[in-house]
View 1 (cartoon, helix red, strand yellow):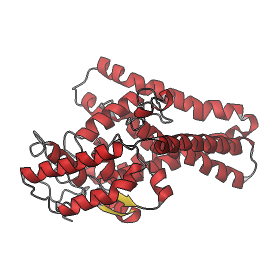
View 2 (view 1 turned 45 degrees about the vertical axis):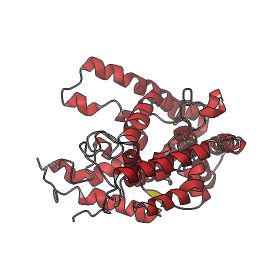
View 3 (view 1 turned 45 degrees about the horizontal axis):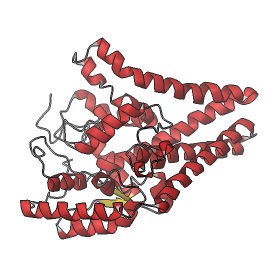
View 4 (view 1 turned 60 degrees about the vertical axis):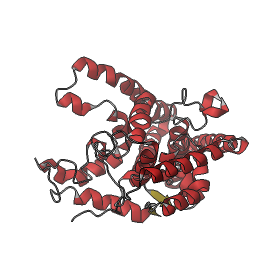
Length: 361
């Protein structure tokens, strides 16, 4: 039950500087070509998500019979996935700020999820993207619930982490929403009640609006079909949660994804930062619509190298990034969904046990 990872390449300072130079040049080259096709893509995605939401909610409200309910749920789930992954996540990364469109600005956009935008921007854009897979600094690593490497402390409760993971997958938007509140600090006595209340306020306000919309407003206006709409909204949110959880966990928790200590990531150069982003990330292979519905997080390596690049460009530059990795002897972690997700589940199960650990409490 020992974990095995690809050997980390030992690149010289000169090689690391060269790696950074090549990746910086690639970034500049693509940035100079931003234009109308990028703008058309994101606006098309917004229209598609809106149309799918209208169709889904219409079928749930006015449809009759199980078939229209199932189609309505699928359409609404599709809309929520598209809005969260391809639109919300990418817009809030600033990928379309160059358009100067206030509706697609990272400073204004707020997504259809219970997570407050300011909480997500801090925990994801700031902490996760800067400290990717650094144990103790990247709080997205295991989401404070899961032990995914022998470098994390094992406790008896860790034996139940396959159950914790199942619950996290089902309620994933809520796990993301409370992530930046830092509840662990409160329970350890490191946060006052006053600070907890202040940190919780954006979450409570956003969650209240989302609960009102999905579980009160839309069921009420459906009148006699309120139960059908309520259950449909629950089902659509569940599908969205399971899908986004699977895609996101494949991004950094696969069998070949590397972790890093605070010591080895201290005083990083630009080249070392790029190298860590590549080694700590995992790609998923698939077709066009698979990439769109994943928010192009199927190209997690490219996303972590260039988080503010319009996401559809990742598929275009992936062969060049892979070529760069091959020339520098860096493992380019890419495989099919089931292979990668299977390795995630294996990692969750393996590290539920106190094997390979020098930090058992």
